[in-house]
Length: 129
Image 1: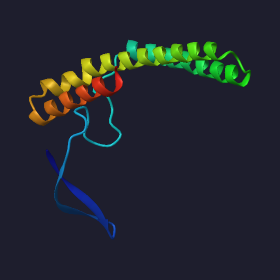
Image 2: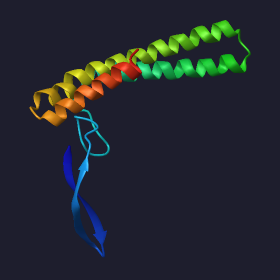
Image 3: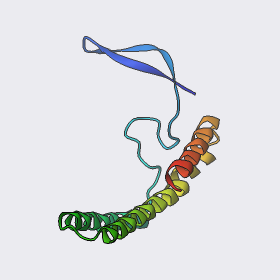
Image 4: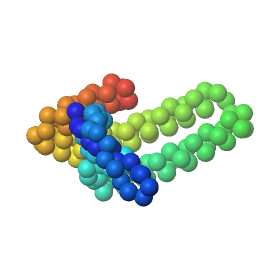
């Protein structure tokens, strides 16, 4: 567990509060607004392209529903969107493993390593079925 001091404002000045224990939720960055340790430009470009295509597919689905299209056709298109989203998730996992996870696992810091193992297991079990 990390320990940090919480600062509070008191009449224009900062005053340190006693140490508090905080759990590490991501090995990439411990602060709010986390950023990836590194982003492969090719993966980012592929994800952006795929997400724009998915956005178009979603608009098409809306039109299909509004136009009372055959249910089986809509379901087929939904499956296509879901598979495209899984592709984005696979690319993000690849980037996460190459950059964020590698950084945490090579850090030599036990809390970062354990946090990353926990994060990876949670991602695999909950999101990448």
